[in-house]
Image (cartoon, rainbow, N blue to C red):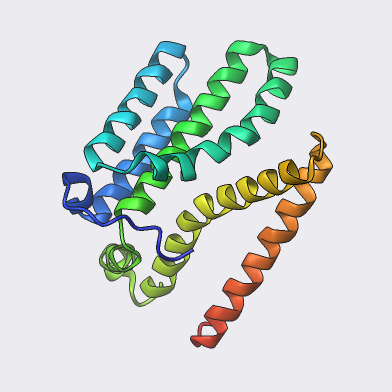
Length: 197
């Protein structure tokens, strides 16, 4: 989970983590309310420009974003069955763009920067809110998005190596089990660091 950060000196890397978090929240909110396909296409293009500006290696983009397409390959046809292809493609585009933005934040921001940003943001409320814990929760949540995508990719590759056919249950069960195992390992690591109360 740790170690996804891609070092760099681009403007995206040097932008303050708090500003990037704000832009991430606003942009994803805007993407979720877009109604026209051309608007979504422009937003996806903008995300691509941000990846180019951050100079993220193409294999890292592939590693973190493309696995989500496997989930969309199942979700989009189901959505099309009930709401039509336009609504399904809009849903798929929104999810892909949002995941890509979260991955870009993860790839260009260190965990320590996220923790520092949360501490500054919550400083006025330190009597009631523990900024360190909120920052840790936020950092872990953001990093769990590409982690889940990586688990899905590994399960799909393992199924392919065994010659298994496309069963939704055969995909979902290993993904859920491995996600729970990762969550348990993460919990044990937090307990070992005294974060168990």
